[in-house]
Each structure stands twice: as structure tokens, then as C-alpha cells.
Length: 513
Image (cartoon, rainbow, N blue to C red):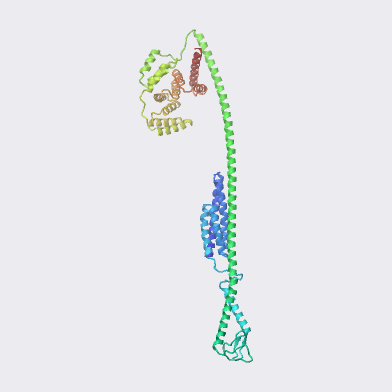
């Protein structure tokens, strides 16, 4: 059993070493990808390597000193299971079993320096030696009986053969055979008992001392082994904790440096963006002012040449007629036409009355809003990448799923504008205005749809309505100024310039009043 325990210990150490190498490999890969617990896994791997090596050593020692090696295997398996990781802990279970087998298979006797068992060989040989010495000593102390010639001990008072008194050999006397012989036998028995006691005491004392000394040595070795393994384990654990703390500190410092770099970069980008936006805004404002000044000069020349002939962009319908139409318009398209006619010159009562009429009209039944919004988001992504036809299909699918979603209707109208389909765009955008007649993001693409048809008057009116219903008019004006310079079509750029001119005239008129 001792050898079996040693073999199992060696096998467990080999498998534990392989498991520890695999643990180190996992920790190394984790460190390469900057995983959080990578340092801990590496520490467990090194602990597994160390205790697996100890298991191999104690397994080899078990062939010569099975009991002590078994104790070492048990201690190593416990420490390896704690500090070597999960896979090594499984292998250390075999080492624990090997240690138990090595202890159970150790011989029970104490070995002497000559390799002989003290419980059998030395005691028996000592007994034989002592018995021989006792016989020789007895022969040296014996004498011949003067009466019968038999050998008797000198200390014996009577001859055990003939009963002759031995104190006076020159005049031997025969005495009664009963008492003297009994005394002689008693003396011989007493001598034998003393000799046996002396022999047993002489033999037992060295054996007991040898056993006590051997047992004490075993316990000392056991205690020292436990202390050594505990010290090694504590050292490994402290080293592991220090390495983990060092790695954590380095990771924290690296994260702080990275965060500071990101903040500095973000601040620099924001400052650069703000400066660029400011410069761009100033440039646009300057160009708009120049264009407006040129338009004013051109208009003044036309007025001067026409001699009191007034030109208007939109020939407005008379107010009473518009008001009546606003009161009785029964479709979103009719009300939208009234609003386009009443915005320049601005007649707010008519505009808002027509918007209220649209708000009171019945709306489509709501559909699957969640699914429609998902497809709508995909359409927005396609539109951003320039895939206008694919985006148009997605918006159409979303509209079919939920025709009551105003954002989807407005996106569909804008997609029709980008694909140069003004008629379909107007229809989709009027459907969006049916859901919300005050939605700026629906009036603005409606201006593009009218511009595609060559109707600049309605295009300007649609932009003015977008401004009228805007919740942030300053932002809307900035958007118009930007588009006056960046719109794709020249006619649309002119539409934005005309709209800005109308708004400027309104501001000047309001300032004079």
C-alpha cells in the first residue's frame, strides 16, 4: 500500500502540473486581452505548479519512507487544493488518497541501524545471547558435589541430587531429603525468576527507548513538514496577493490615464467643433446678409423702373373668401391649400382655424407601432447611407403597419422627395399633416415637393408655415440660412433666400410699429 500511495502521488503530481500549465495558459490569454481576473488566474497557476511538484517529490519519497511521505502528500494536497485552482484541486484529491495509502502501508516496527526489526530480530537475538551468558556464568559459579559428583551452584546449600550439605566439603553429611531438597528447589526457582526478570528488563529497556526515540522523530518530522508546507503556502499566498494588488494598481493607473486622455481629447474636439461652428455660422450670416442686400438693391431697381408697379410673389385670395374656406374645408388637402394661401401676407386667424379643422378630422386606425418603428429606423439608416430607393421601401412598409405614426408618414414624404417623386411626396406629407397640422418637419419637405413641381410660391408658403409652427424659431431661421447656401437644387436655394427676405420684412415692419 505504501508503494501504491507513492505511485498515486506521482501520478497526481503529473496531472496537477499539466492542469497548472493549462491554468497559466488561460491566465496569459486573459492578460493579453486585459481581462479583470487574469492576474488571479496566473497566480493560481503558479501555485498549482509548485504544489504539483511537491506531490511528485513526496510520491517518490514514499517508496523509502512511506509514513512521512504520506503526511507530506496530505499536507501538499490540502494546500494545493486551496492555492492551485479548481483543476489542480481535482488532481490534489488523488494526492490526498495517495498520502492516506502511504500512511496505512507503512511498517509497524522500528528500524534499527542494521535494518532489523526491533520487535522480532533484536529482542530474540538479545535473549539468546543473555541466556548463553547466564549458562556460562552459572557453569563458572558451579562446583562438584563431594558425595555424588554432580555439578551444583556454589551458592546452593544442598545438592539437588543427593541432598548432601555443601558448606563443609571435607566432611559431607547426608541430611533428610525432603526439606533441603525443597529449599534447593526454591533457591533454584528464585534464581530463575530473578534471571528472567533481569533478562526481560535488560532487553525491554533499549527496545522501548528505540521505539520512543523513533516515534518522537516521526512526530518532529510531521510537525516540521506541516510548518514548512504552511510557510511555503503562506509565502505563495502573500506573493500572489501582492502581485494581484500590484496588477490592480497598474490597471487603475492605466484606466485613469486613459480616462484623462479621453477627457482631454473630448475637450479639444469640443473646442475645435465650437470654433468651427462659430466660424461657419459667421460665414453663413455674412453671406446671407450679402445676398439679402443684393436682393433689396435688385428689388429697389425694379420698383424704380416699374414706376409704382408692385410685384407680389403670391397673389392672395381675398380674406372673406379664405375665411369661408377655412370654416368649411372638409379634407386635409383643402385645409392645407387654405393655409398656404393665408400665410403671406400672414393671416393667423385663418391659418390656425384651418389647422383646427384638420385636427378635428378622423384619423387612421393605429397599427403595430413597435414593428413599424423598427422598420422605420432601418429606413433612416438606409437614407443616411444614400440608399434612397431601399429607404423608400422600408418607410412604405412601416406606413402599412401603422398609418397613424406621423413620423413615419413624414419620413415617407421626404424619401419620395429624394427619389424625385413630388406627387407621391405631397400625398404622404398631407397624410402626415392630417395627423399633426402643426408639425414643422412635415411642412419643410412639403416645400421641397412644391419646388420639384416648379411651384415656388407654394414652396415659400410651406417654409413660412414651418416657421409659423416652429417651437424654436431662431433655430429654424438658422436652418433656412444654412440651406440657402447648401441646398442641392438652385431653385430650392432661391426659395430659402426668398423666405428669409419675407421674414426680414416682417421683422422690419414689426419694429416700425
